Amino acid sequence: DAHHQRVAAVDLAGGLVEEHPELQQDVVVGVLARGALEARATAATLAAWDAGRSALLQPLPEELPTPGRTDRYDPTHDPRDLTVDEVRAR
Image (cartoon, rainbow, N blue to C red; front, side, top):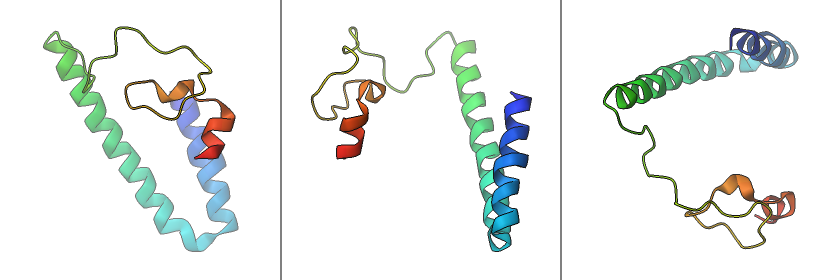
């Protein structure tokens, strides 16, 4: 939302540029790229919904894995289920 965009822009990016002014151009490019990608993703999502289909590139599996599993990353499973130790091990 607008509040969090302001926090990111002013507090995070602004603080970074204050500490490292040489990164100002990189920050501006990053902000513009994020905006462009968000606009493309939003347009694609809304177009898919208007057409009555999912905006996901691949359908979700019928059964999602159990949180906290201990196996290595498997692209058929949701990576958000990884434990902190599994992420660190990568």
